[in-house]
Length: 485
Ligand SMILES: *Cc1c(COP(=O)(O)O)cnc(C)c1O
Image (tube, rainbow, N blue to C red; front, top):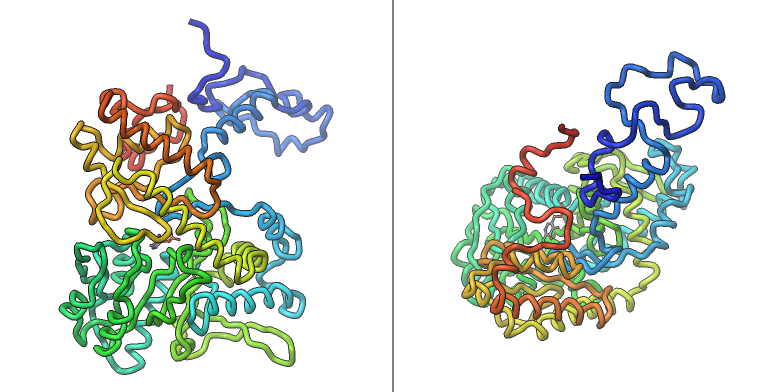
């Protein structure tokens, strides 16, 4: 059989080409004639080095890039991850030489504009979350959590106390208990009630003077607003604990409600989720940490101070938890967030939040009945369904997720949060048009019909992708990254 010219799997580049073929004129075995390259720099000891033409090379990598799915290619309703549209102009702004080309060791007087951006963004973020001081240093949401937990630890130690526990609702993101444990605390899971919420009664039952903090996400990872939050915060504060709020779901709050007003003492932002940085596939991210005024001295160092109209870095104070990252955080992401907030303005951020909540509730209304909704409470920026109705036909959440790929959509987040069996967590974000939301809803309804009429086909989905179902554990634990004959 002849080889297909366009191989849908895109074989490794090492399997392509032909001996002696070169990508650029003058770089072949007889190189040196046209382009004078020192012979010591020419290698002939690379076995199986790809020998391909320039067009082959270009096509290979371009096709590989087309096997990726991104928010720039289609609807990407990955719950909890906020895969919203990231305005391209922010990429251009972050790439400006005045931002992208400066060195972290550049003398302060030469980078006053960049430093001004940092302090202004810190101030804006404080305003958005209703807290008093912010550090942009943490490089991801999880690292912001870790910095926040260390701040809480420093606060208790400053008062001569050593509480050992951190209460965490069962619906929490996995990074929450991890951050608490890495900070030396025992993570105590608190169950959520039949509303999918943390009740003040449950908190009262668990809280005592050995509790350093409650780590709570609001809206929670079920997409529901924690209605008892003020009472809960008061209960924890009374017992001497602090409220850590995971701010990864700020796309449901900004411009509308402030965690600081709900009783939060410490919070992390996920700038890459809420404030327009392309993400997924491992970063980079940015997880600024925000605190109440009386916790400011514990923030990561260094901090910017202003003297005579000039900004400069102030070395670490005695109370600070110290550095959590080299230099000053992922500055390029701060630039994008700054540009995004500036472009939206306060009213724009409010509109963004409203749009995100409206879109999630629209999807909810369109799919209600066809998919099981585990909770009654109105959704915020994301909605969680389950596969309960499809289970009757032997169809699971994974089958639904895989079938969506055939419809051209990315799957929602599946099997998370863990407290819901067979969860399908859909976060449409404010970016999408009504037509896109409808097309997605139609695809989901189609799949629900197919579960009744043709469950076998559904279980063998996807059919339209180069690979069908991988052994995901093996692919993660034993990835084959080299070519194999
Ligand atoms: C994404 C997320 C995190 C972790 O943020 P990273 O930037 O991925 O480290 C924490 N909590 C919640 C609720 C999240 O959605």
